[in-house]
Image (cartoon, rainbow, N blue to C red; front, side, top):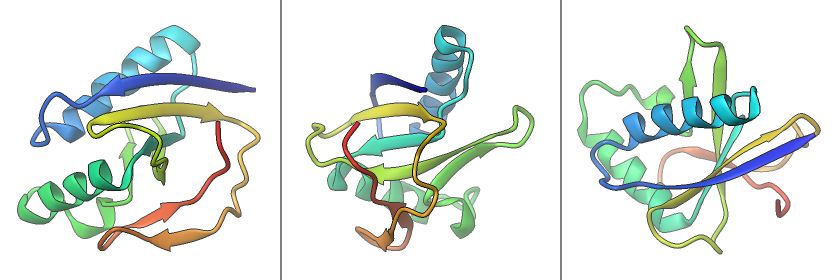
Length: 116
C-alpha cells in the first residue's frame, strides 16, 4: 500500500513546522503518517543549513523528522525531479528498509529509494 502527496515549503526557516503540519494533513487524508519525505538536493541542503545554525536542533535530528508523541518518523530521500521548495510525503508499507544510504549534500544520511 502506498500513499503520496505533494507539498511546498513557503520559507526555509520554518521547515520543521511545515513538515509537521504536512504530516498531519497527510494523516487526515490517508489515516497513516508518512514514512518518507522526498525532495531535491537543493531543498535538502537548505534544511541542512538551517538545522546547522539553529541551536534548538541537535545533529541526530538531521536526516529525518520524528514526532515521538504521535509515533512516527519520516526519513529524508533524494528526488531531483522535484523543484526547489517542493517536497513529497509518502507512506509506503512495502518500502525497502535496506535501501542504500548516502551522505548528501552535507552532513545527514539520506535514503535512496526507487521512483514513486
